[in-house]
Length: 103
Image (cartoon, rainbow, N blue to C red; front, top):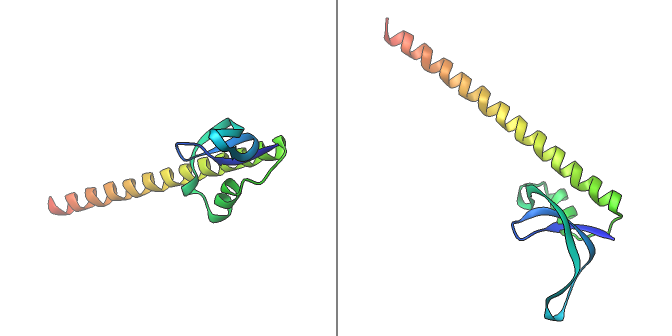
């Protein structure tokens, strides 16, 4: 059995086992992998999927982690494109203002 959760760094992580801790700090799970995506940056639905500790098959759990990682990467790329477009527009406006001043 597998489930999603967050690791000590707050990243989305895939765990194997059961989401329980016994007395004396004995965990019934182990981290299998993590992705560099902070749980707090996800949509509410995705946050529930990560923090709900729903037991899943390995395939289902890894598919969900892969989907989260791909969508986060796409969102980061879109943000980078938007920032680059805005910077280009600001440079263009500054160049136009400079030409106006030089006349």
